[in-house]
Length: 178
Image 1 (cartoon, helix red, strand yellow):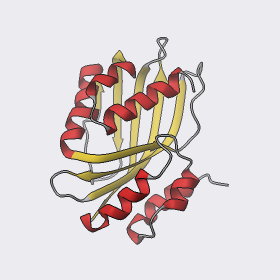
Image 2 (spheres, rainbow, N blue to C red):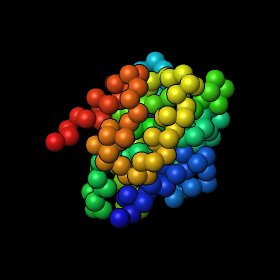
Image 3 (cartoon, one colour):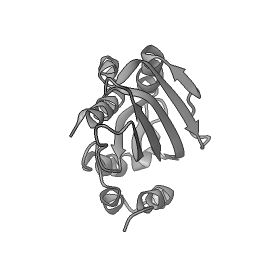
Image 4 (cartoon, helix red, strand yellow):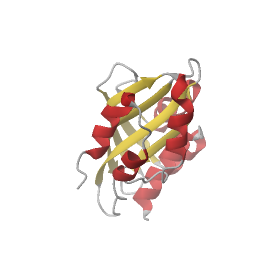
């Protein structure tokens, strides 16, 4: 695994584990973040510029609202030397206040700078489902047993609990599967 994959893994670890200090090892100081939110079940500022603003949005604010966060990249590692990388993602988490479960999916579009760090990230949130806290054990058991953070979409779909509420996520996972 190369520098680009390490930067992505560092971002995921910082966000999922609420470790803001790690983002300096993932993003360039002057990096930018764009959010394309295609659901009403979660909100983010549409754009952030600079490592401090990105850290506030992706780690500090996010970590205040959510816990038990698992984020997965559903495609192969990026190859070093490529300036751009796109991958699908899956995320699951619980809401600290309501105890509801959220499961979402979308795309990451990464651009890397000459330092091998992330220069620009566009996060597209296609779906964000809200499930009752009654599903906490099933969903967290599923997510906690998947390969982390690089997980084949087929593996995530195959291990998914049989909850009708997750059908939209299952369809997303099965896109482009042979």
